[in-house]
Length: 157
Image (cartoon, rainbow, N blue to C red; front, side, top):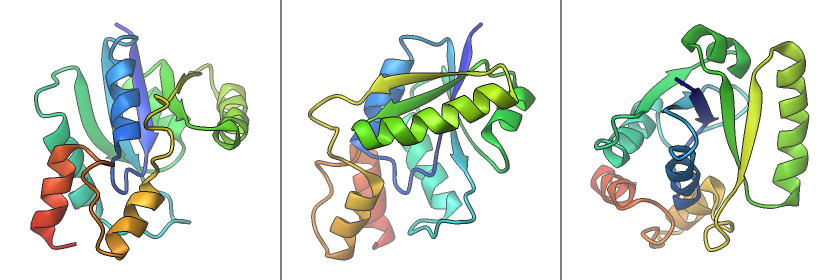
């Protein structure tokens, strides 16, 4: 069984993330969507809320596991027997940033990083854009999965 991890902060999950996850299922038998703890970031949504968004979005996907982790992604990969790290690329800046991380991860372990290009109609979407739209009381329904839009509305964010 080939297993991959799709790590991120998912603050919140967007349709771009959703696109990569769905397409990742075509490549991997099991996909672990893992919320990482990045102490350099401040989050709009709690880990519990982000877990809820992901669990609701993928509740009917038995090959997707939702979890959290802290520390190095490659160490977490080893602890769960994941052979691959899945990453989405929206633009050249993403590629340069992700390439450096992939080289570092490959140096620290034998875990390969697989890049997928985000679908062109979703490549403009980022969690920071979604947070900015929310901050200004805008409609995020075209940017996030329906389950996330509904959950955020119910939270009163």
